[in-house]
Image 1 (cartoon, rainbow, N blue to C red):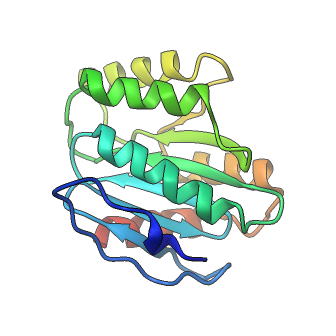
Image 2 (cartoon, helix red, strand yellow):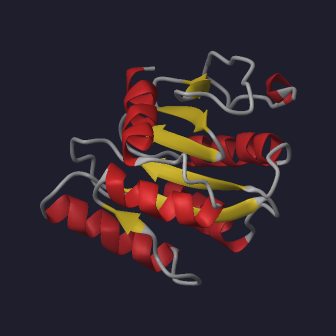
Length: 175
């Protein structure tokens, strides 16, 4: 799979690696100052390092389409927001989220968002995400355990465990 053929948004650099189909830990597909895209089993993670950007959303969609095409039975997509509050996404980012929601990949089995932060900002972000996911039941989670339960059922993969999901998120955040 040649993910390097997908151009990056102007002004961003990244590191990309070849990815085995399944791994015990997350494998990084791309990392920038703004986000990390990683995969673990049949789950892609978009881990934000700060505030979401339209460029990161669009880029992760491109990477998902290429990667998921090689996943038997499709794949899931998990958005992981930073632990520290960043505020709600700007208009350009919201528009990119809406584009993604309106025209999902044919390989996409489901999308979820992990918001581990608490407080008013986190509640606002959850509200925005619920509106963006209004076409389907919103999959908003507060813990890796909840994500694992959702992903294991969605992808019919009992190896998607809470410990594995937590480790995949940790590896991506450290990336």
